[in-house]
Amino acid sequence: MKLRATLIGFTAILMWSFLALFTAASGRMPPFQLSAVCFAIGSLPGLVVLALNPSRLALLKQPAKVWITGISGLFGYHFLYFTALRNAPAVEAGLIAYLWPLLIVVGSALLPGERLRWYHVTGALAGLCGTFLIVGRNGIDFNGAYAVGYGAAFLCAFTWSGYSLLTRRFDAVSTDVVTGFCLATSILSLICHLGLETTVWPATTFEWLAVAGLGLLPVGAAFYAWDHGVKNGDIQILGAASYAAPLLSTLILTLFGFAEPSWRIALACLLVTGGAVLAARDMFRRKIQPAVATQ
Image (cartoon, rainbow, N blue to C red; front, top):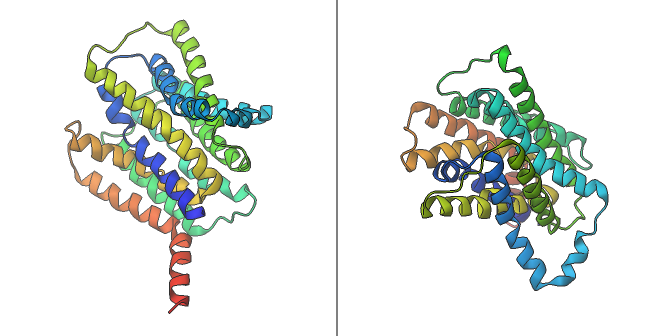
């Protein structure tokens, strides 16, 4: 059961790796408008499930703390991320924001029934180094003039890691509530868009398909899969493995001609893959021991 849930959580990481490709292909839609549209699309699968089985509507009746955590996690993360990108260079802001997998691994020690081992931290740090190679391929230059952006990026990292860790505490809450989180995030993003941006719609069918892909996968199904994974799977392994997202994203961009292959990518592959395998040491050990016992 735990292995299956962990693998479902992995699918979220795989879907997030397509975020950059779909975003690059989606045209010039402003970020909050894109967020509003994509989260509206992302809520559709959950709405279909609820429509086909109305009895599941009762699962949406949850304590206020569940809704506050979920909406703060999804909307808060994206609001802070967009704020960081508006007020600091994308490379530095992205690197700071991607501290969240490490924070999940370290913070998991506070969860009931979890123990933090040296290989969890080492695996997460290896993934962080791999991400540094990918994100900082053109150099890193932290400048005090971008303090607001850097601060937003730090808050972004703490917001998503905090959401993921708190979600683990709500393991009895059905994943159906993610539908409500997506709808609320869409509405709040729309409000931000109307107050801060100029509306720009996709210009071609291809761009509309990219927006639909964003809404259905990285900004849709991925959040349902992540919710199930962190509630029922191995959150330490998922945290360390999350560093695979920027690596896979870069590989996908390279495959589609948006980036050039380099030694940095190869070394990042070794660091991220090795770190994930090291962090998953317990999972591999559990699979090997029963096999040995039956011989």
